[in-house]
Image (tube, rainbow, N blue to C red; front, side):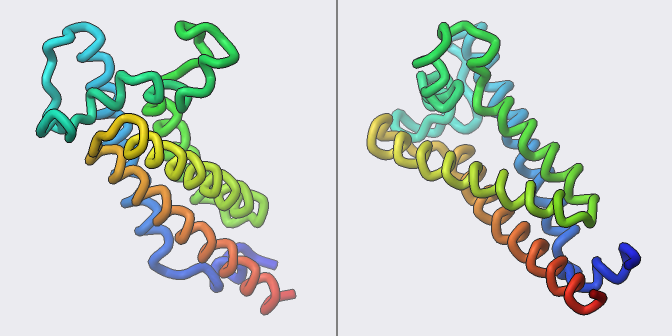
Length: 170
């Protein structure tokens, strides 16, 4: 079975959507990391996404929940190499989504779907923290949540398309 027969079932829009979503996610993640580093170096630093007292991305990025989802530091010291900024995790996630999206294998498609479910669970958790704990509106955060949901949708469509392509050729 050739890879071109398998890709027949994958929606034509999927590659372009994945590329756009991942690039936008990477840009937001790199920007979030820049804001966090800048704020650590200079507490007076004001990010473009700091629009008001309760609309502040830098407040969110530098909070306890801005590193390791606020959970890693429960198990390791706060300054541990394992307690990375969420933006670093985002950079890794979007890079993997982009790279694995180039493969037409069912295994890659399964990993894309499973990792997307994890990202959506993390997004829901962090959205809850944003609203219920921090009482903040972080536009960068909300944008990444939307990207994560859109990537899940894209990955589910890809996986279903690969399955249909396999059935037609098998």
